[in-house]
Image (cartoon, rainbow, N blue to C red):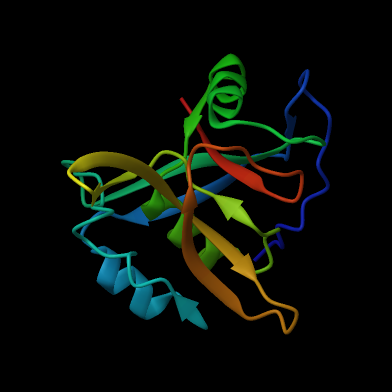
Length: 167
């Protein structure tokens, strides 16, 4: 299987895209099942079927053409979404992220799936505050893979890459 430590090629304006790669999805699998087969060293307890449900599709299997977009500067989620759309892509979701990491274990991390968002309501002193979280993959210094969540809003540094799917 080809390694996805793909050189980022500046094919588009501000966002830098990798070459595309195909991910074959099994739509019958739940997040719990994807976690069990994903060879993760650490998984955040909030990565579950309730908070990040797998999208429902009529077919049991499908293939998607994915890209990885990076930015050489600090970027906010609106800019990532805009750049993906401008380049004929949508934001990748958690199912696509987890499956891609299984099929391409050498892909460049950290990699974020902004197409899956968990809205957490925190009640503090009678005020409800919504905080949005997205899943992302990372590797530690021992190259052990982890799956966690991070705040959607507030910005992302240049080390983060974003999963996109061609539409």
